Picture: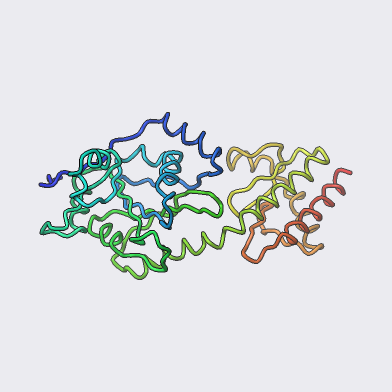
Length: 300
């Protein structure tokens, strides 16, 4: 790695107690987190949308709760003159500010590529809209930085409707910007479509578990996002092997046929229901009614 004549100011790693504190505080303010940390040493973190002054405190709280700020030093781009201001400059350095010298012979993309060359581990956070106003288009600088630095792009989001902060897929830029950015657009389109689907899955899970509890049946319903299913065991399975040991193919076929004969089509493997943008509360309640009747027929 080579040394830049303009030193970067990037914070060090956080501490696990901070993550525990963030996880304690999130439910108190009505927020939660979802998604998995990327398994890469360097990446550009694209955070969207950025339309509120609350994005920074809420985003930091979610990031600490996810553990996002511990494995990597992180940086955000800040105009270089800001670092000369008393008090503000040290604060920017503590927050992970990377000074951008717009008068330098190399452009911003080159400067950020240099930052990745100087650090074996680095997360560069960017808000692609370039403004807090809602916009239909993103500036493409983040893409060109990732392409020049040969690092992936990780998509992150703050969903104020669900009050959820999370991480999406990791995208390696191929050089075909149209195709790569289309993948980004598809992710956020799907995320928007999923917003009404997740409460429906929660309703499905609650209805099934209520029917199970009312008959004292040793089964359990569980949910992940907009997918929900029931298991022939009293608690959530810890892994696929535990679920397989409690499988009952004859019982599964009975429940599928029972539901199908009453207008409910389950996913043709496991006992799974997948919500869709077309699913309604009436559909979910109809399934609960049919499932409860099946449990009554089996256990009385």
